[in-house]
Image 1 (cartoon, rainbow, N blue to C red):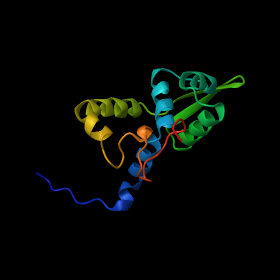
Image 2: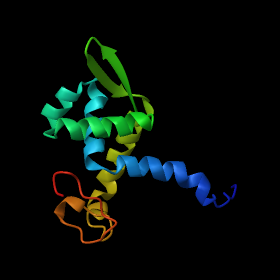
Image 3: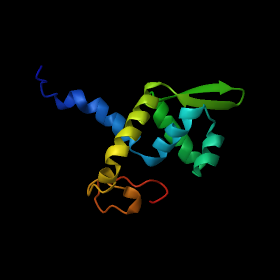
Image 4: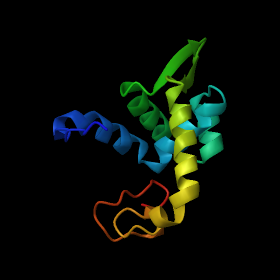
Length: 129
């Protein structure tokens, strides 16, 4: 068995940024909607009940991070997942949550920010802020 060396923090930084981006409830909801098919901003606004500005801002963030692509068609823009590995990540996450979901939800530091976590490191979604 090979012993793995401890990874330097700098090597882990891109993964931390990815998970931080995925940690926002609105961005995660947008990505989940894009699993099924490409969508327009207006589709996502209707599906998620968020404002057009909020959806557009999150899509810009996700696009800047290389997680979504945008395809113009006439005056409309269609957004899609940029990498099929995101679907694999969501599937693996769902499987993990089936095993430990209640433990994660009860985590005193990061558990369910929608219920009013008092820890300043908890991220509040737009709907609960």
